[in-house]
Image 1: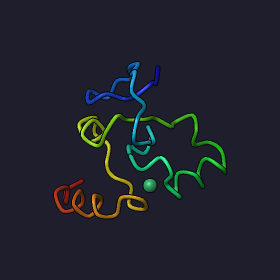
Image 2: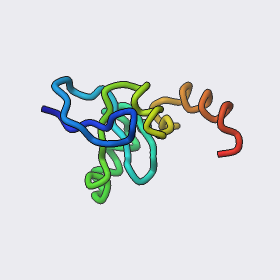
Image 3: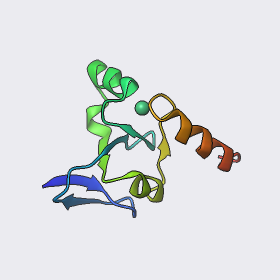
Length: 85
Ligand SMILES: [Zn+2]
């Protein structure tokens, strides 16, 4: 079982492994091999806020935004539709 964050922002046990990682405090989601996330994990302090999502749809529904480092195209799209944020 994998602990993932669902579209409602709550964690649940999933039989499928999550395809995306995220940061609970920063409300950011990105690739599991994201360079920025791995650097933050190496520095420590990130792991406690590390969350996982099944897919991008769930991450967006839960109120997370794409990571600018590993998902630049999704980030640009998100920025264009969230000018007030
Ligand atoms: Zn990233």
